[in-house]
Length: 294
Image (cartoon, rainbow, N blue to C red; front, top):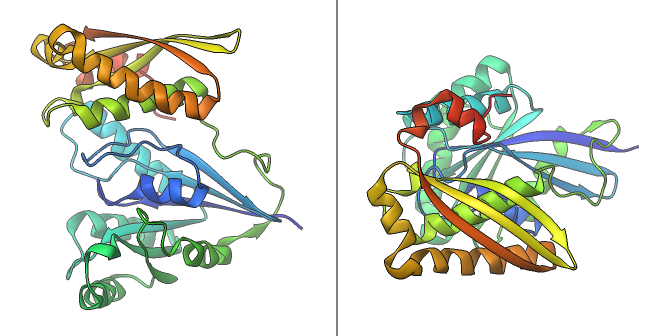
């Protein structure tokens, strides 16, 4: 008899939720950067082992929104929590429960949602820090399990998956056993390009950047992609393009490398940069860019 479980991965920005999803799947489907609020959409990751299928929902980091895009991201996380069988709360080692974590825990309680506490980045702290974190969260919520991990180094992943088995329920698989995500190819491409922008741009620019795939054609074992990069200021456009187009070429080179690895074919990538002022607060533009409430 097959079994399934839908599990949301939640937490504040930059705690390693996407790194955790990639480690579980053994494949990079969620973009990763050191900058907060990297994930904007809900990303589905599918892990099938024998008769068990886990469907993980990687969510945007919970934060205090300042734009309509931020509102969308927070709503995406809240909706995910309302649609799953269980949740994984990812935290870093701290001696007290933060306001963001407390808000998420409050949602768990209201919905009577079982949850696992994952303490990430344990390679950067000692056992005392971890013990204090466990004590603080044990006083805040009756977690079904506590699992210290290092997603970056893929430590503790098997233990976490074993703990997730308690949430499995008998029923048919929702996805084919060989699927690892339900993301459209265009979205995967856009996210890979945005990741490279996040890794190369100055601090103030990344949150104002969006990537839209305008053309996606496969011909003669070559994938031809035209992508438009939107920013909010003319000065930002100059930084993204760089002197003589150097910065944009760097982004394109890094993105092409990942895309060829993912699709297994040669990629021709054509990047263009455009300015769309205050797009993060324009509902119509957000919808056009793919940030639509489900």
